[in-house]
Image 1 (cartoon, rainbow, N blue to C red):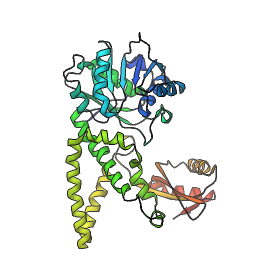
Image 2: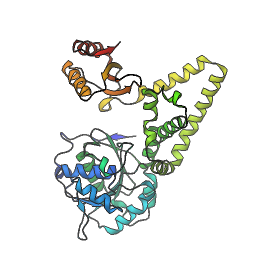
Image 3: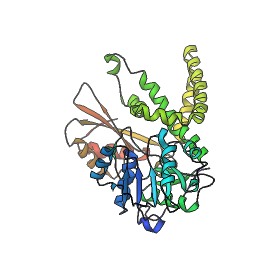
Image 4: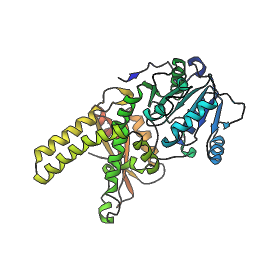
Length: 371
């Protein structure tokens, strides 16, 4: 079972009190690697940057993420943040190039494969796998942020030979980045991400694929629903094909379940079986209620408050300021642009019991609220 490790009073400060004093070397200065480097620099740690692309190192350095590697550097922790297909080889190379004082982790989306790649390596006890559940559909150092991991779960997946001191160092990194460490075995991690990330990404791509080549008149009807469902399909196909291929067994098992349910949906649609469709849709709705709520707690019933917003600079800022004055907390935000008018429809998700309070407050400040 997943174990959520206890938090310190401030998970980011100071790094030295939880075992991470640096230097930290980041191998791979894309979105994730550079974001980790920026978080480490924010905490005052020395950061070393390594990448096959010297341009990426220069860019990340220019952002304040660290400096290029020197021959005499001895990092306390090396974070490998390279594409999935390269993980095993790079982790082994880092273990070869470093000594007993250096812990090595990675941030790949699959954990069994890199562990197996170093299973016979003499330094395997220094390798502690990890995986931050954070990111965007964008890539490269220019998209990085030191706040990327704040409040996000970050799996720590030590293998059977892992040194406890190394696991503590990786946990210190996770807390320094503002994330919540979750202890999992490599196999359990891979099953979990197949369910919560890899299969959903494939489903989003399949739905998005039905839009390619569609007529303009069909696409004109696009709204927030189709954007919500397809957003992650905008990720790099080369990267995600590596991720999913690396977790083939767990993904294939879940896809078989999805195929069975898709067959049931198809049969119900063809037969006009409204009851069957309702049962399948209710099963899906139950799944949405199983997703943890804010701060990992039980999800609360939410209600969208829909507000018409003119498409002018400063209008969103004014809306958020007025919503803030109401004292009602905004849990989520979506924007749908009306192609026929110079306005957008902003949906502010709030706890259901306070939706009417927010509607009244916004109307009193001149906003058009759709009831």
